[in-house]
Amino acid sequence: MTDRLRSAPMPAALRAGRPPRHPALAVRCPHCSAAVDMRCTTRAGRTRVQRLIPCEARLDAHAAVLAVIATAVCPTCQVAPGTECRTDDGRPLRDIHPARRTEAGGTAA
Ligand SMILES: [Zn+2]
Ligand SMILES: [Zn+2]
Image (cartoon, rainbow, N blue to C red; front, side, top):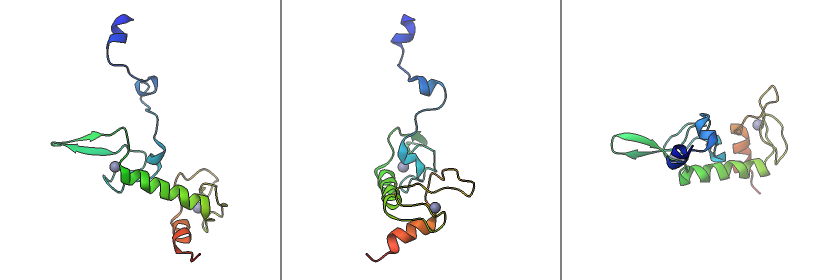
């Protein structure tokens, strides 16, 4: 018991093999090219080290996605502003359809 307390504290979720997912992991990182659901990495010598906090660029990209979700109707899955895109079978896409991105960026206000 005490031995365990003295060793580095490890969150229960991490021990279970599923670290809590940062919301920004829903988008691919434009900075370090981490894929969706993969943590950002940073170069440390010859190895790649996982970062707990996503890169700035990824946070920005995620914020941009949220902005698109908040403002644009999706032409592909027809969800209303404020609603996340859905797949054909009604499950959350956890990303936005490309057409929605275009819709948000291409509309002349
Ligand atoms: Zn990154
Ligand atoms: Zn959609």
